[in-house]
Structures are given as C-alpha cells and as structure tokens.
Length: 273
Image (tube, rainbow, N blue to C red; front, side, top):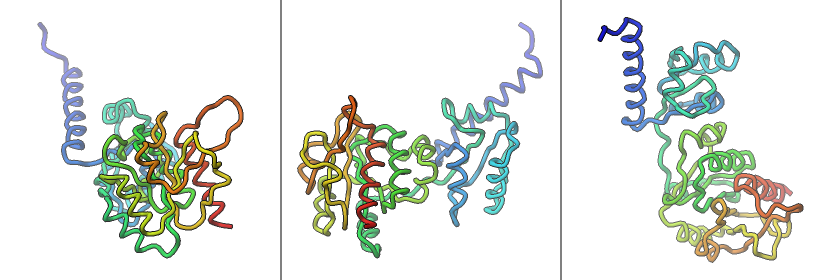
C-alpha cells in the first residue's frame, strides 16, 4: 500500500482539529450559538457571553462585517474558516456562515422567578409552556413573548425542551434578553403565582370562553400546552380560567408558537387599553 499523499495527511489533520474543537465545546459546558442574528444579539449585550467566533471566509457582506465589528468591541477576533469547517461544527444546522462559542446561559429557577416578580414596577406578564418539547417551537415562543412585552417564559425541567442551539437561533436573540425559567414542579409554581395575585389563564379547545372574551388585563400568566396534547390535566386544574382561540376553516388547532403569538398580543392589547 502506498504512503498517503501530503493532501491526504492535511485532510486528516484538519478533521482531527475540527473534531477536537467540537468536542471541546461540548465538554467544557459551552453553548454553540449559530446563525448571524443570534450571534449579533449575543454580542449586543454590554457583557457578552460570547468567547469565540468562527465565520465563513466565503461571506463578504455587511452582516459579517457587523459581527466582526461588534466582536472586536469585546476584544474578540473572529476566525475566518472554510464553510466546510462550520458545517462540521454544527452538522445539519443552518448556521448562515457564523458560529459562536458562548458561556452557558445561567440556569434560572423558581427562586429567580419570584425575585424577578418582586422587582417589577408593573403588573407581571408571563408565558408558561407546559411540556413543549420542540426547540423550534420554544425559540419561536420566546421571540413572540419578548415582542409582546412578557417578563419571562416558564417551563418545567422535565419532558420539555431546554434552550438548545436550535431554540437560541429560532428565538432571533430573544433568548439572550428574556428570562427563561425552568421549574421542578409546575403545578406548585402556578399555585404560588396565584397567591401573589397572578391570574392564570390556560388554553384548550374544549371550553366555552374565547380568547377575546377572557379578561387578560392585570397580573397575568398565559399557559399553553405541548404540541398535539395541550395542557396537562393537573395544569388545567390549577388555572383560574381556560380559553380557546376561535378559528374559521378546517384547521382544528394552531401550532403552539402561533397560538402563543395570538394569545400574547391579545393580552398585550388589553393591557395597553
């Protein structure tokens, strides 16, 4: 068998280097954030959690220039690498020519939730997701919640999506700014919120009150359920009211992220009256 060519050796060395870089990101507990909008949002914070950036050497446009400029303000010098290297770092992901390694977002829990509520100077406005498992839906819900003016998104720790790289990308930067709180016992948290005067409104197709009939002003938490299953029975039992979104046509239900947007913006409208 002949000796491998110099090109083959370089390819093997490059693959080992890429694999090492990818393994290092996972083993050190860092987040890989991909997508230019998500990276830009992380860099716009006064104290960014971004520690390293890779951008495609094929992209020569203003969006990449903006990321490089923002990174340099934090003392970060992005690496320009072949697009294939980015593909290996984030396989099956639409990275758009940019990947950032970041310190993980802090894990927020019930204690952080009630500290947040104590510090508000307006009526609380919360989105609660009951076992939403698709990170795309979680990211989209985060984006809608921030746009509607919610103060936090709450979800159970078990049987629910965390803020994965996919969720971070889909949120388009909202996850960097809006608190995402994971709780161990959602039913208990609902009861504690009620004790603090928060009105808990669930969503379900089998009830009599429409979204537009429900009172969504004042301290409020809107609860939406998992894809296809809706809110769990115990969650529903701890709601003060249950409402449904009236629809025309043949569709029986909406995607949870679409339903979140509809409910949150109706609540925002009522709160601003």
